[in-house]
Image (cartoon, rainbow, N blue to C red; front, side, top):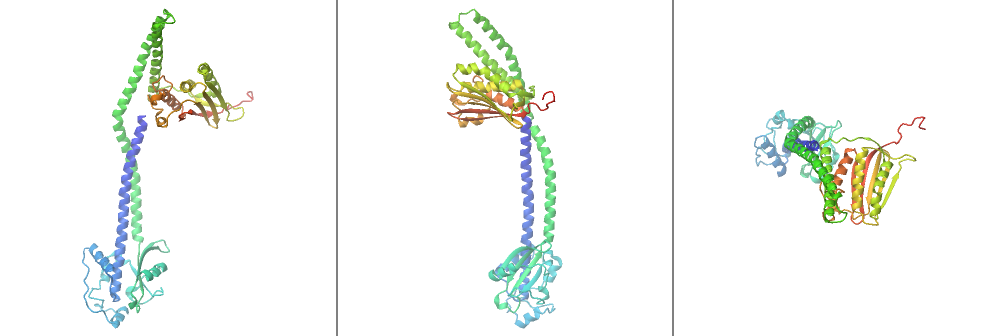
Length: 488
């Protein structure tokens, strides 16, 4: 039992550790991805502000604020443009024609520092700018500064930008590379130049870093899972050592006490029997002797059950696994309980369903322990079935599994007690629904433990007023797995 608890504790520690690693890894990945998205968007807006200044177009406040934030991320202050009058059309035409005047005119006194910025800023160096007409047609040769890669564009982005003023989206190039696009509509009074600017930044470098980070996180997570599993197993073992010692001491005490109690109980019963032989059949002293014998039997059964459970818990009970003919077994048990059923006016019905024509049901079990289980279940059913009621003992085979059912028409068990019926010393309240153990509450616990030790499963269903149904499920085997010519 403690080994299963150690496994559960190890899984708990492992789950907590993996959850922490997942939180840290996902947080790191998300933060880096968010940083890339923010820096890319700021770089695109900063570049757009520069392009608008080159065209002599005043940038709106939202772009100006983004431009200032871009400078702030680099520890610099954004240049302050003057209130100079806008350029004359011929000055703008001269600028758009690609004139290389070092002090080229701008829509203010903002320095033209794009070339210097691009020489060292990777976010700006990879940005391309494409001008478009109001019809969405690309313009060529409008400005040397407005040229750029033409492998990626988005007609939907152009249409949306014409309608809404701007458009953000991420698209995929023909080679699968992601590209972040910003499409901006220039106000109508500037239609002499391009009507739309579409800026884009390939994301291949960022995606490559994110893929590598993900691979590193997965590798570290795998190694950490192994380390956490080993550490969790060790910590669980250390934490359970006191409980394991206490459990072993308790098992030893119960086993020793049960063993030591059997001898005095046997002597008490023998002495009571001898004393009762000289007493008349009727009388007060005879009744006292009968009470002593009854309590000795009850206590002996309780001691036997405790010793059996102790051996089961310690894995020291010798369980034989051999073929058992179910029909023969339930027939013997039914004959044993037949007189008791007749005495209490209870109908005891016995039956066997075959998996195949002429194929009796044979299970792999310990015949002695399986008989003990059936006796406990039938005794329990008899105790709680009123006169004129019925108790059924039925076996059925289905392929490699066989079931033995003990059902009664007794008072049943309340739903709130059903989850606890296999707990040791549990009794279902005022109905005294014990487990066939004379009131100690060990019968069903012993039966369930024995069936589980034989590799089977015991389940219980009950409804108050209608009775209880206990099902034993065991591994079945062919009655004659190898038939020789002589057998045939």
